[in-house]
Length: 151
Image 1 (tube, rainbow, N blue to C red):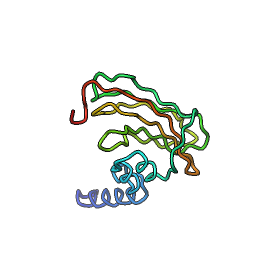
Image 2 (image 1 turned 90 degrees about the horizontal axis):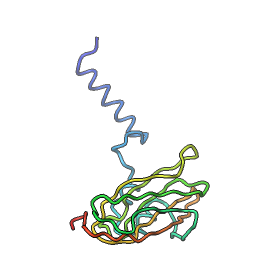
Image 3 (image 1 turned 90 degrees about the vertical axis):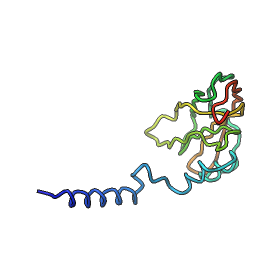
């Protein structure tokens, strides 16, 4: 029979092994933290390995034209592009523009929805980053009538 102390030591060992392999979700890699800390859309895309974004009809963003409550703005992003490794949602005028990042594999349909906080009216970008570093985007203006980010 294992003692409590032995069980805790083994748990700590397993946690450190998971963290070192990137399988422990609370240990965010440095480039992802830099992307979430970025102050501009371009900086966030660059931190995630993307080139200068170019507009594309193969990337789709959906959301309301007018958000009555900036605390819960529904947004969705999808793409039909091949070889996409990440899909991003960014709100240009948020203090930290990166709203969400979705990692895509060939086994995952590149279609995601979430809710975001927006403090003011802003352009919202859906950006697909491909395996070769190309960044393709679609944008939509969302007008916020009641602020959610400190508004």
